[in-house]
Image 1 (cartoon, rainbow, N blue to C red):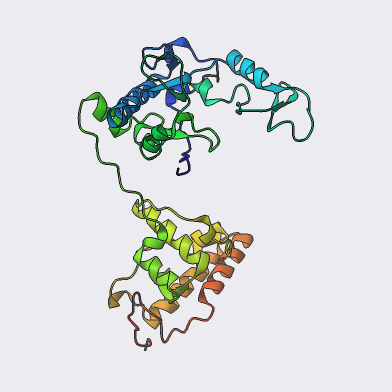
Image 2: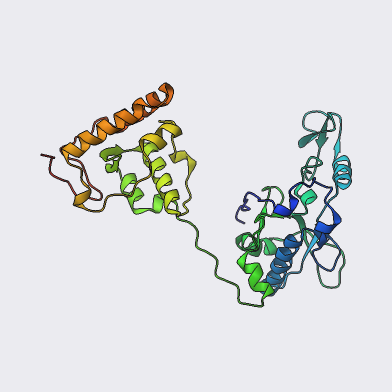
Length: 331
C-alpha cells in the first residue's frame, strides 16, 4: 500500500475568532444521518466522498469521531495517557498540557485545544458492514480507493500512523468533485500532477552535465547548482506555472536575498537577437554597480559575492546559448 498523502490544511474563514473545541453551535451541522457534527462544508465533502466510494467499491464509509469539544479532548487525553513517567519503553508519545507532561500508549491524541476535531474539520473513518451497527476498522480495500481520490474531495491525512484520520484541507474552496456530486454530474477528470523541475527541458540539459548560460541583468552568466534551481523556481512562479521541487537541489551557496537582487526572474533567450553586444555588457555592468552602491553594506556584499560566483570561469568568447548555439565572440 502506498504511503498516505499528507497535504497542509487551510482553515475555513468561518473559524476566524473562534476557539478550538468551543465552536458555536451555529457552525456545526450533522455530516450525515448518524448525528456526528462538523463544519457544513466539511460535511458536504464527506457526503460526496462517501457516496463516490460506495459507487466505486460498494464499501460503506462510516466514522467513529467527528467534532470534539474541548472537554471531550481532555477526556480522551486522560483515557490514553498518564501525567507521570512510566519509564523508558513503557510509553510511545508525550504531550504537554495543563502544566504537566503526559505519557501515552496506543493511538496518539492531540493536545487539548489543538485537534482538528476541535475545528470541526476532521473525521476518524470506519466502515459499516451490512446488518451491523458496530463500526469496523478502515480496510486496505477502502484505502486503495481513498489514497488516490481523497484529495479530490478536499481531504488529506494528517499522520502516516493514522490511516483512519483525515481532515478537510481546502479552506473555503469546495472541490470540483464535490460540486459535481451535488449537481449529479459526471466526476471531473483529476488535474494532472505538476511536473517536477527535473522534467523540464532546460533542467534535462542542466542535469545532463552541459553548461547553461542565461541572460541576467543584460549579461550572459553561467547558471549552476543552487543558482540554477533558484532562478528556475522564481521564473516558474512569475509565470504562474506550478512545479514540484526536491529540496535537496536547492543549495545555500548564495543568500536568497542576494539571488533575488542579483538574479531576478527573466525569460530564457530564444534567438540570436538576445545576445548582448560588448557595449551592452559594459553598460549593464556600470548600471548594476550603481545599484549595488546604493544598497546597505551587508546586502551589497552578498550581491557582489553572488555575481562573482556566477561569473567565475566564464569565457565570454564562447558562451553556449541554449540549447546548442555557440555565438561568435563580441566584436
